[in-house]
Image (cartoon, rainbow, N blue to C red):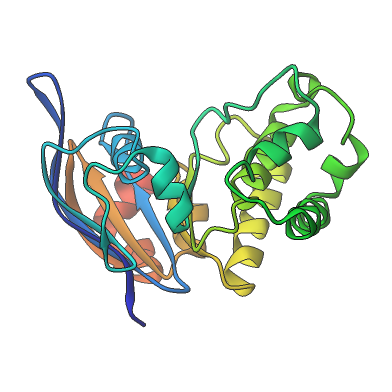
Length: 238
């Protein structure tokens, strides 16, 4: 599989504080790749930089062979890289369907947009039931479905998901992870940041462990699931 996303020696700082310290990783087309690590490890900062919300201090990010350095977020989205952020960030006063349509704001193909709204409803039937409801009245799990559906509306080649299961019930978490597996099956490449390491590693083709801004371990999802240090630190096993 060819590399869709290549990150080389990425460094990101907030003022004088370096939050990401020379991170290198790749995502191949068709893969689910996960970044796991504790709060403050630099995972969210990494995604914000890839999506153009933050500028790197150093390093290179290439997506489909194109250098993303300095590109604004809307240009990154137009290239096919979408970001469903931690905390969902839906528009609470707009309806479910209006939120979905905002995900297609760069597109002009009305028939295709309507088709993708329907696809979002097929992935998340609960959103169809609430299509005219204000998004702020949805449950946390429903808002997560909406955030993912909105990100999919730009037809991304690579979907970045930041903590999609945060604060959700086990049943809803399973639904979200099943949806990620379905997206992979239908050809969407996924970069997943997730604190539920067990669920993330079970789903991932490859995985990276981040600690204090650095990648300290990498391997297949199965390899890291079996790694003693990962089991102790992230899977709650002695």
